[in-house]
Amino acid sequence: MSDQKLPAWITVKVAALVVGKAERTVYRWIDRGLLATDTDGEGRTVVPSKAVGRVALTQKRGRPRGIPTRR
View: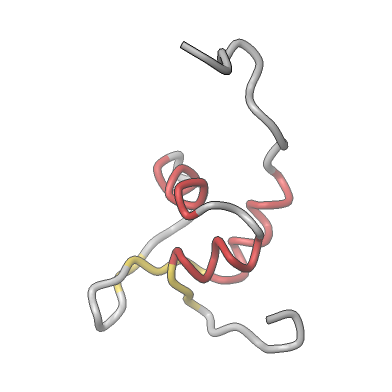
């Protein structure tokens, strides 16, 4: 997808593929208010494609401190 132009709004699945993250990560960004959402004609959640890249660049990598690896 690197040389293709993305539509203004993309599904969560496509957004995750574009930034190399899990779909759950994109949903976390939505839950935290970092991404706006809308619904397409098929009832799927879509996000603005330009915002996805910006949000991905601002997020720290790895697990936050204080979160155990095992419970």
